[in-house]
Length: 248
Ligand code: ADP
Image (cartoon, rainbow, N blue to C red):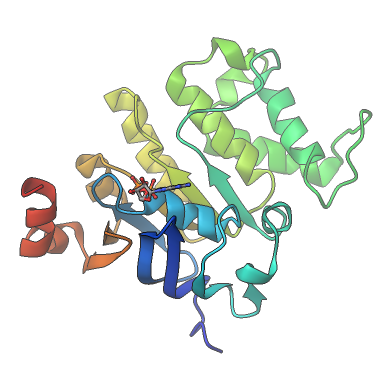
């Protein structure tokens, strides 16, 4: 097993755009059930890394495995979405005209393992799952509300809930607490701690207080490769990391 039991395994990955090396020898792995935070200055390659994992960008060279058996470089973007990798972009994209419940139902209906149908109705097991997800994402009191009426934070949770309906093994989240109130940020931390263990999470974030609450291990990306890895205290004390953040 080349991946050593890791849920996500990247080794010596390279991507150049018109000769510019956006990802330059990136090696990184995530254990099952781990919650990993990714930090790094603008242009470090965080988005490109997510694009590689989800099949949006094809690397020039390198190894990218999901679990021990799935070579992600052999799959297209549309397939990867069905393999158990959920991605959330920074801006929430929910169906504003539909209720919270309908949004979650739709996420279930568009699950590639269920035949998509206008007449889709969740079965008993799926209804249980809906109820569980609604509680997890702190929206139990809002199921009949239109998604458009939710606060920014609630929309973010709803979108996470929509991803959860697909039962992903790995969740990739881009700046999940950007624009949230302090209270929403705190509840998001709780949510992530609930998800950890059951799912593996990779979270790109800038909010250090949030990272401190949720993460044991932080990876610092810079110039398309890993600059440092460790607890937040360890990486914040690392001179190379300080230089990257303050010296540029
Ligand atoms: P981050 O998300 O850490 O800010 P990105 O992955 O967006 O970094 O970008 C890494 C580098 O690659 C940046 O310098 C960016 O300008 C460049 N880059 C990203 N995508 C492209 C592209 N499609 N074409 C050209 N350059 C790109």
